[in-house]
Each structure stands twice: as C-alpha cells, then as structure tokens.
Length: 462
Image (cartoon, rainbow, N blue to C red; front, side):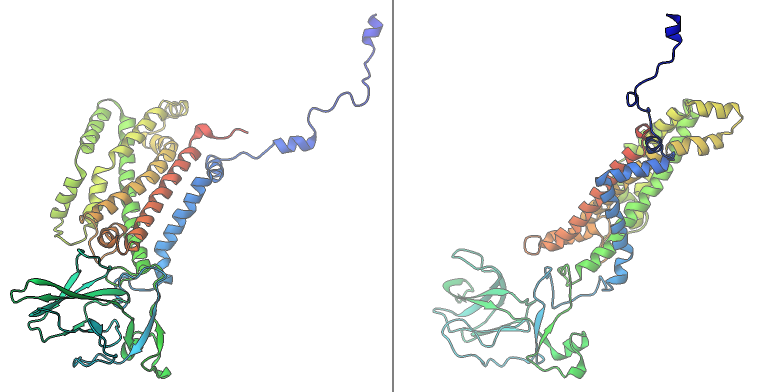
C-alpha cells in the first residue's frame, strides 16, 4: 500500500484547468489611480453632474465670450421694436417724413367712425360723424376687444365742441390691432350712451432717412417710399424700452455670476480659515470662536444689507453691488466654518497626524499639509452649493429693488422689470427667470455630484 501511495497520480487530460491565464491576469490588473483621478472618474460616471458641469462651462462662455460675438449695446433702444417677442415680424415699409394733418381724407367716405388714411405707426387719423346729443367728444384706445360694460381703455383726448369730429393718435403706436371708441359728452362733461367703436390694424413704417441712418438700407441703393425693409434682429426679443434681451442677459450674467462666484469664494475662504483654526486649537479657543459664529448666524441679513447701503452712501435707485458682496462675506461664512471645523476635529485624531507630530512637524505644516488637503473635498462641495445660494440672494435683492438697480442689467433686476408686463409680454420675465433657474439647478447638481465623487469612503478598490 505504501508503494501505491508513493506512486504519482497522473490526471486525465482536460480534467484540471489553470486558475488564471496570463491574459485574465492582465485584465484584472490596472494601474493605481490617485485620489483626484478616481474622483474625476466617478464624476464622469454621474451623468447629471457631468451635464451640469457642461452647463456651468457654457454659462461662463455665455458670460465672457457672448458679448464678443453679440456686440449689441445692452442700453441701446430700438423704439420701433418695443416689447417685441422673439420671432416677431420685423418687416416695415418706407414712408415720407411726417407731415401735419389738415383734416382731409385719403380714403373713401364711410358712415360712423372711420380712418382718414391707412393706419401706421407714424399716426392713426380718425374721422367720425356727429353723435346724437353730443356737446363734445372723448376718444379712447384699447388693445382688447370690448363687450358691453367693459372698460373703454386709455383716454387719449377730449374735444371742446361738437364740431370737432377728428382726432390724430401718435402715442406710442405699435404694429398691432387697436380698438378706438368715440363717446359723446353732454354740456357737463358726462358720458352719453351714444358711442362708436372702430377696430384698427396698424402697419409698421419707417422714414427713408431713419432707415439709412440706422443701417437698414444703403443710401447708394436709392431707397424710395413704399419699399419693404427688415428691422434689426433681436433673437430673444426686446424689453419694454426696446433694449435687446439677449445682450442684457449676457451683461446681466456678468453681474449675477460675479456676485454669485466672488462672494462665495471670499466667505468660503474665510470660513475655511476660521473653522480650521477653531478645530485645530480646540478647548476654550474652539468654544469661543464657535459661539461667535453662532452669534453671526443670528444676525438678520436684510437689515445689515440696508445698513451697509447707508454706510457706503448708496441712495435710492443706485446699484448696491459692493454692499451686497460685503454683507455676504461678513454674514455667510459660519456655515462653512462649522463644516470645516468638524472635518478638522476628525482628521487631527488620525494616525498619520499623530505620527507627524512625533516626528516634530509644526502646526502650520500639519494644517497645510494634512488637514486642509483632507478637507478640500468638503470645501469644494460647500463652494458649489454656496454659488447658487449667492445668485439667488442677488436675484431676490435686485427683485425687491435693494440690489442691482436699472439701467445696470442683472437677472434679478430684469425679473423685477419683466413682472410689470408679464401678462402681455411674458418673455421679458421668462428669459431671466429661466437663466436663474438653470444656473441654480446646474450648480446644485454639480455640487451633489462632487460630494459623491470626492468622498474618500466611496473610492473604488476594484
């Protein structure tokens, strides 16, 4: 039996296979990744965070490079296109310069309220027949069709005698449909039931001289009245003063992102230094510093914003960018200080920090070499969450008239202006509000992705 045990066993071919082929071993072997390389790999795997990063880069390009491509002055007014929505008709007809009206009519006579000439943005000239019992007349203009009992609209003029049966309207005419109403008045100026209403479609016109001076046509082309031209292009329309919305969004992004990025950088930096000092020193110093941070948190931001505006000598109607940045830096750092302090308290008890102490490392070396780098992930995440908060604060303060004041554009002040015409021209409010929403959402999603990517506990060990 001993001989049989000593005999070597010869397995049949194919019964045993190698545990790992050379090719398989190479597949399972990968080069070691650094902390930042692994964080970038995990950030790229987060689709929402990566898209948000591209949006943030696009916003920065929109802010910095946009005005170099779209060179329209954000303060320039196009009075022929006021509150024009995007995609609106830009066609216009060349006409002769304005001439005073002598009361004659170029159109066939018709009963009741009628046009004396074709209605244009230069003038709407009305004629009407005498109304029963009228001692005078009052002319109204409305932009909505009227039913019985509805408001007649904007009162334009009032005649003094019943013989005056004509009126010329030149008040801020736009290429749209208006509803004119002439109401009879008695001797005491009270309205009588007699009235007449006319629907008028106004055509946009431009004089030849204006078209040449604004570059709509060339003088050498010999433009003549009756020729058709295209007005200046405004891709996102214009606001209530005829200013280009796209140009104002670009320049407004400079103000909003300047406040939204510079202020968080400053108060996050201060909070990092403050929290690091409190966490590293510990004891009574830590308690005293954090109690002061609790006191700062309790201070009302809006009240101090008002005080800083007074201290900087900024009056009503003036932009308060500097007081806004100062108020943010002085009042918003405690949240960062608390987070960094908590990280420092955790890191200073680690073994490598104690080993560095035993080797004679100084305090500044421990803080700068070990503690701050190990809290850098928390600091970056805090910064990405602080940026949308600062942008929202700027938008809110500008919206209530305490931040950036017109004519300086910012997204918040543009929302403040757009809310006045939101029912008739909603694009003036929608575009800046969408820009604020996209920016805040992108930074929040990016911060959420960075929080996961920079978490050392989630680092892959594959």
